[in-house]
Image (cartoon, rainbow, N blue to C red; front, side, top):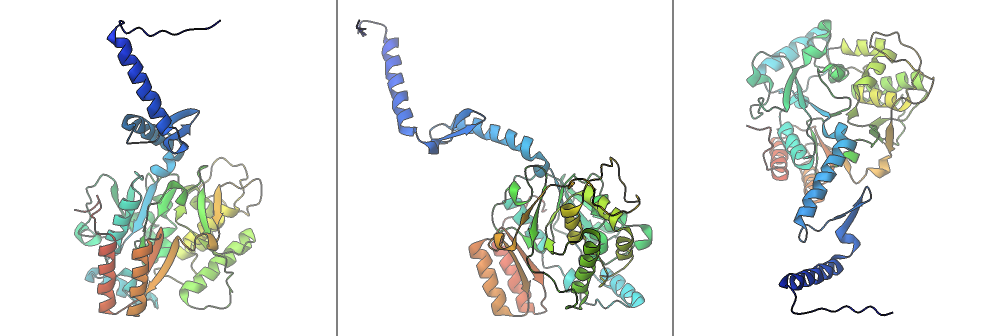
Length: 406
């Protein structure tokens, strides 16, 4: 039996238009029938071509945004913490010197507090390359009644996502004032309304290209932890920075029997509580020191070792005043992912900016051209020409104002 299809011209013009429209649609499908134009999400095929199907693209982006919020909402809305001190202000210098003489501290350089406008350009790099982030930004600053002195004059303190935190509110009363970053950082978890996970960004750290959620966290709400594969000789270095690292390593080895140093910027307040519980005496001693000391425990190292090694004992509640004990029961409490040094050699860079003008210039050229995801510029210079060069580089690298500027 043969089936014959007859098309009769005398019919309605509607059928003519229908046939023509169907033919055009089929031709269009054949033209775009490639994997590059389609994306499968939860069993549904979405068209990716914004030129051919702008409405479908908008639907896909809306679905993508919704899915990201469900899966990565904790990252999108997490808190960000910066610290900032303007050491060029005379009142800060006077107080710094008063306590330095009183406690016989050896720290006498203001370079660590000099304002090279790093914070402004770090925020610009953040706004440009972390546009997906919607969380609160906390700026921890020294105490002072004059807001125009203790915060940068370009910062829009009325921005709804900017909160100024006096560092004294995070410290025990007897430990104020302090010029010790190791003392301040161990108390970040006390910031009111801090998120379950938060990101700490030093003001001399910058982002050279677009970042994604996975640059900071894992999908199961874990930390990305970046490992240093160089084992430190605990008896080799004697300056305050290195010996404080050694003090930290010794405490960790005693607690967790581990020995690899590492660094990261991601933190969890609950890990701080555990950290204070495990190292209560040592952290209290660190907080009591007005200036950095060779016997300090370094907070980021201590925090991340705790994340990597702490095993849950099944307790439901915990405070920093709970009795310390040796961890070792149950399964690891925190999720995390290790990144070895070789995995981040093209994405993470640390550059001490010294009085070597040529070396600094070459580094700035490299960062400008290569645009690594993360790079840190450590102020270790006195030359005015290098100071000018660094400010020029930062302005050229990040010329666009962030939403947080006046």
